[in-house]
Image (tube, rainbow, N blue to C red):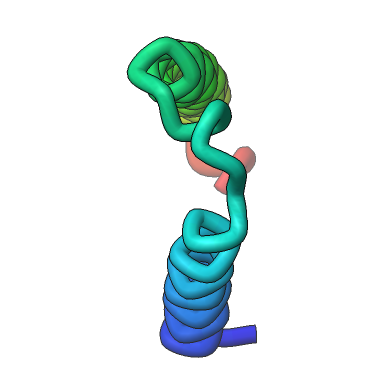
Length: 96
């Protein structure tokens, strides 16, 4: 699935959720719309946002570690091939 399609799907889900929330807001009783209830919802959203940021940062750190490991392996393999070429060159033209 392309990134553009995923973006449109996410947009549709977020927009649909906002529309559903506006509909549910009009149907809620007044005691659910007090400032205390709103503060609890804000606290929950802040907790979810913080956990999402933490998971995303751990995912990025893991990807960077994997990339660095592959890069170091490539550099090491290049150095080993270069050393092998030098060692074979010392044996003379028969090793070509």
